[in-house]
Image 1 (cartoon, rainbow, N blue to C red):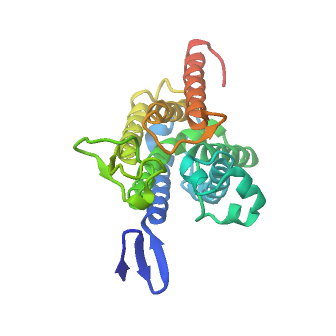
Image 2 (cartoon, rainbow, N blue to C red; image 1 turned 180 degrees about the horizontal axis):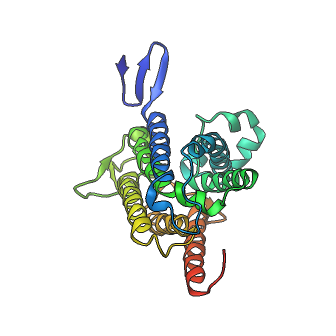
Length: 278
């Protein structure tokens, strides 16, 4: 086995660290969801939380397939600066449809993964007569864990770094991976590392939140808390990000997370301030 910065070779096949960490993150997230699926503390009177473990395996393919499709489409429609500088614009993808399907060209976007995953979860719940919000709650801590582990792959790909920095925890970026205009700048904020830490914190918070307020939480509260927590720190991390996705001069990811934060916050407030069934 030949180890490299990008991954390792088994014969002629290259297994990239970034891809392996994403796979490991998804597996860990699903295992956490499976653990949460059948814990006794979820058996709250009036709530159908005591799901069979098999529901997690049933959800695996729909979430992976539609989450990947959504993430890829988000990247294609809102390519970041690093892709644009390589000529990988939306117009390029539309005129080269084969490259749209070449997942190793370009990248993915978390907003699109959310949208695709939510659509898949909605139709899965509807087809199997499950409560959508309960399933979303079940998956929320695992999603945060999967994101934390998957973000570690950005280190090996030398991507998702922030503004130039000279802090003790700065990261060195090789010239080949620097954005245009920053060719002579060597060290940057390890933006991906900030996300790793904050995603782990999100997971711990959600697990605590679910247990601490089990008697007062409504179905969907945990998922909204997940969306709000991630959107909050992602909104501010975008100010440090160099590889921004602009649409008409507007950071589209920042706008998306700002709107998600507001919607999640308002949703949590209204469902507990005003008695109603959401």
